[in-house]
Length: 135
Image 1 (cartoon, rainbow, N blue to C red):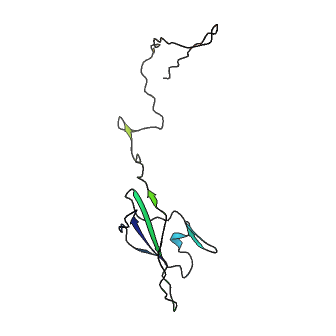
Image 2 (cartoon, rainbow, N blue to C red):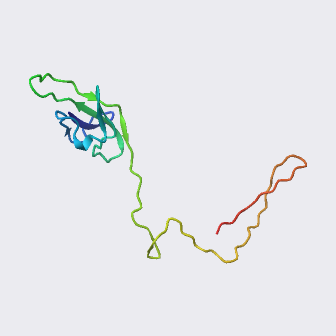
Image 3 (cartoon, rainbow, N blue to C red):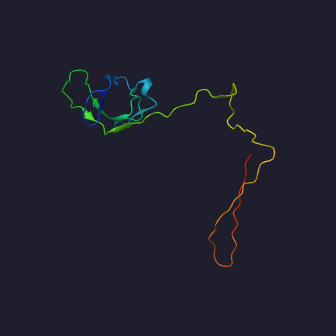
């Protein structure tokens, strides 16, 4: 089987052809992604494509042996490759590795905020807003 990644919708080839030989069963590198029952079904196979865009994958079955009739390639549905979110590999505060929670004391005697609120309530009912300072 051959797979090639193309830009959707113009069909410009964006990845090299990848060839997989299933004549001896599912390859070790694909066992986590593929199941073979009545049909071969593969999901989330790594393509090597990293650029975010919409892609189509053209899949061609290449027969072996005496029956070498041309088999028309099939196109996948459009697949969106998303930008990978950034990962923090190293983060230090004052030259030391940062903890998952970092508390910075602001003051020993926190000021209570001066608050003036307007609250709409039913007649005869009193509403009170509570404010909480987290240190």
